[in-house]
Image (tube, rainbow over all chains, first blue to last red; front, side):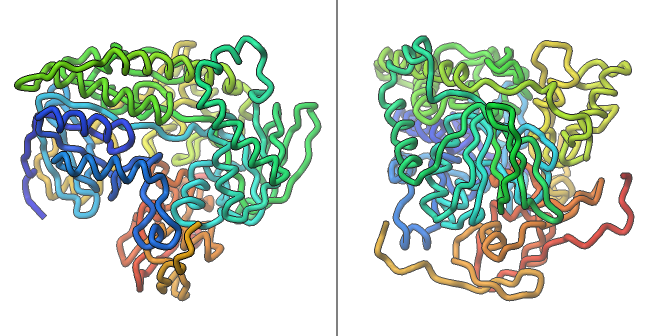
Length: 455
Length: 97
């Protein structure tokens, strides 16, 4: 292990090896720039193009071969792919990045001429009584178990929350033999009124995708219960039962081995916020998003964002946004920028953004006011909704004061699970976020001790 | 799906008990397959916790892997002979209720 930070440089650093970062890195490298692609994971692909392990691919086939092909092209184009590398800090408008090897803790400092944050998203969870019980998981966790590992999350499973993502998760669970006891959708998206269907008709491919999932579910006798929600989970050492409130207000108890609950996705914006880029409230009003132009340029000169980090819009938008940002960086840095036709990409990006806005209207979030006082909000520090409300009511009437008073958001996950909830419970109406600070991800102690030079 | 044979089975040890898993599976998958959901205690309130996000964000699935504590089981992959330790014994004293 090195005693000092290993120095390196490149024209462009792309942070995040998911669909957006991969598409961007490919365009940048083909345009003649030296590109470093950094990802905390040991394999490229991000969450959508997550790689099945070699041995499992040999037995079960390639999961999402388009991802395999994209990664092959990125490597062939000469992109310096640094997996297992965490970007935990940045300064100088993103032209300096601080990294850490996730296995050895070895620290690095990278100098660039431009940086693209393609850091993606994670799932949005909302607390309810019993949500910290083992066996209560995110839908994404159940999906990865089913698709990557070929392991059912349970024999009998309840899947709940809101959003289009619940449908592919349900289908993946069926494929590994799970019995879905209930599929509980908070909203009524699958009988949309004429006004919202208009928007969807411009994206027939996306509509067909949802229809295919619904057909698969119907074939397995799984009904999407709309307007319903999970009230509480019960169990001693792990979840064994769930209370579900139906659209008519009736409550029933369902026995289950696992409960998967998710409410869409939250953009992972720590890096651009750390660098001080201008932000604005996202459509849910619970997040701060980087303000970007049509190509992903932020208010910080030389810092770009693409993919879900710029606002949740899914894999297709991520690819298009990554390419647009890459073309913008090429126009700025490439020695001989080739004339690029980006008008088509911009049109496609706008259409996909409209479709994302439609999804926001179809799957609104529930009111945080409904979270019972004794429900834990901050999983790490064990802080309840009541404690947060009380702190906010007794003078700590903003997010940061409430955090200091209760420790909510100060645990190892750094508020990634609870930040949006604490903000909603303690905020003063406008969307707020915990400040992004270095290290933006937890670092092993060995890294800070041996690096010596941590700023 | 493919007609290829199943992946190579390897042996891991979970809290001293041998268990079978496929090489390359996530460690969380090996634990779930073995029916082991509680992995640790929350250090503040002593509650049992298990894997939650599955993508390295929540840190609820930390176990000791081959002697290295604080290893996220969701991002670690099974290898032959891997030693996995959970930490579900009650805390000596809970910090507060």
